[in-house]
Length: 120
Image 1 (cartoon, helix red, strand yellow):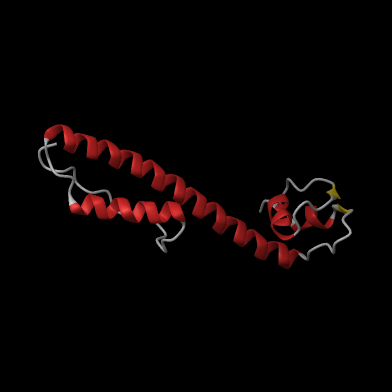
Image 2 (spheres, helix red, strand yellow):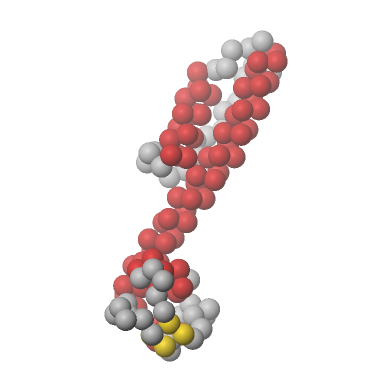
């Protein structure tokens, strides 16, 4: 667990001293809590870490969606150069990728890569 990230999730800008790099409960128990706000419990920290991991996974998915959109742009250019209409299934996949980027999609993974349009 990244203790510092979990603390930041719970108490932004918390003031404490000591090392949390080990990521263990022992390391957390040994920090010097210097913040006026109450030090979170280990259980609260574990719950916050799950949220941090979920946030990181969402961001990674958004980055991957952007990479896939850039690849789709190249396919669109290939279609244009070959005089082939950009296929509806590619367009639908692009829309889903854009929804992932916006955070409005419930998808947990990138849509399946489609076959390249015939004639490109």
